Image 1 (cartoon, helix red, strand yellow):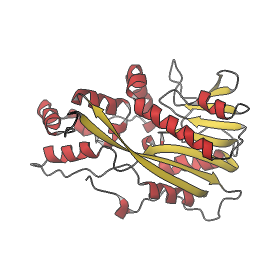
Image 2: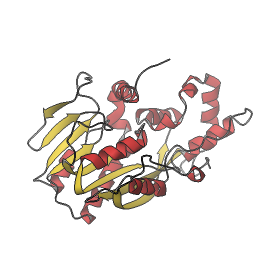
Image 3: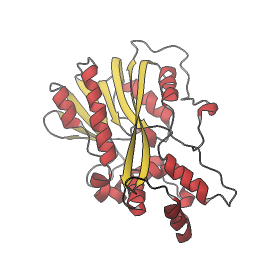
Length: 290
């Protein structure tokens, strides 16, 4: 049995798939571009920006185009060379500083940044309460967090296919582990943030082969919704998954639905007293696969 921490598992995942991250993570890169476009509607003049994007190249250059006078702290979970458990700073260009740290435990003083930009890390978090509390801790009063993640309709074709393949067993269709945007907004309020704004859009990606589809899910860590034990399914199981996976009637390719959630919220000048300690998701809102 592995005793690796969630952070070490994510680091190893990155290290294993590093050569494919650039080509396989086009969706996350596209979401980052769309997340940046939301800054055009937000009035903000930050001097210190924290860019949390552990697995891919950050949006630092783009953030500096919006805020040329700001300093961007680009946070990653590991260095480019050797994994190091300690935190360290690394000078990276004129206005960027590279920060190697666990996003749930940042080596930053309280109220030290004006703006947190986080593209597609939220769904990979192993402790959402701790992550959101850390956002709240390092943000200055009137600071903003802007982030993206995946919603519960993501991978619905995969879950339906999985349920069909397992129809003759005691297994049932898996519930989505992605959180509904309304519950994310409620959780931000519970953790002391103000005026959360959530919106979503549906995107569909088409794959020519089942092998390519599976590779992209693994590289992007989206397949983390599948229990580890299922990685050891036999050849017949995966052949059945490929055979039963739906194809688009028009282009005959394999569709993957992605529910993309965008959110932002402000930190109050003074956090509420008696702030709840958990990021709660009502059980009635945990959806079954459709």
